[in-house]
Amino acid sequence: MFTKIPFKINHPLQIFHSIKEINFRDKSERTELFKRNIYYYLFGEQKNKILEKKHQLFLDLSQKALDYMKTKYSDLEVSNLSLFGSSSVLENPGDYDFLAITNGDIFLLDEFTLNLNGNPFQIGISIKGVDNYIDGFKKKDNSIQSKKLEQIVDRTAISLFRRHIPLFGKDFINNEQEFLNNAYAQVSDLLNNSYELFYLKQDNFFISEEKRAKKMLTRCYEATSYFEAVDSDKRIQEIREEIYFTLKNKIDLEKSKNIFERFGELYEKKISKLI
Image (cartoon, rainbow, N blue to C red; front, side, top):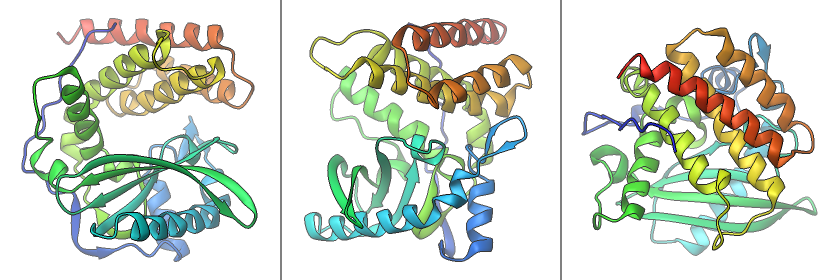
C-alpha cells in the first residue's frame, strides 16, 4: 500500500465543448486529437505510430460498439464515445476499452466479443452518465466499493481531454488546471488500485499471472504520464521507457512486480517532500 493522496476537484465541472463535434475521419483533426493524448509520445521524443496506423480499426470498432449500445441500451443517449487504455499504445493489446458517456448518472461496465471482418475482438465499454462528471459521483453508501467508484470517476473526469481519444459525439474541454492540480492524486490512485487488484493475489478474482503483470504495468505506464506533467526527473522517463519495452514482450509477473516496486519507491520519495 502506498501513501494516498485524495482528489480535489472543483465541481460542477464542465467536460464537453459547447459546440465542437468530433470528425475523426478528418486527418488533420485526428492528428490534433492524437497530439494531445498522453500516449502520443511513447517515451522521450519517440512518437506513437500505432495511433495513426490503427485509426481505421479504432473507427470501425467504435461504430460496432455504438451499434451494440443502441441495441442493448436503447434508452440511453450517447453524447460521446472514446477510446482509452493500452490499445492506444500496444500493437496487440488483447482488448479494446471504450467509454460511453450518456445522459443521467448511470454507472455500468459491459464486456463482450464482437466480430470485425471475420476477426474476434474483446471489447469493454465503460458506461457512465454525464452527471457523474459534472457533479461528482454520488455515493450510494460509505462502503469501500462506493469510494473506489468515486475515484474512478474523479481520475477520468479531469483527464478526458488527455487520456481519451474521442471518436464520436461532442469533444472534451481541456480542464488543464484541474488536471495539473490532481496529477499526484492520479499517480496515487493508479498505484494503489494496481497494488490492491493485481500486485496482491486475489483469491476471489482469478486472472492469469501474465494478465496481472500486464495490468500492473499498463497502470504504471499511465501514471508516468501524470508524473511527467509536474516533474521533469529523468528517472520517471527511464522507467516509462522500461515499462514500454517490457510490455512489448511476454510479461513475467516477478519482473512486473520489480518494476512496480521501483516505481512505487520513486513515488514515495517524491511525495515525502510535498506532504
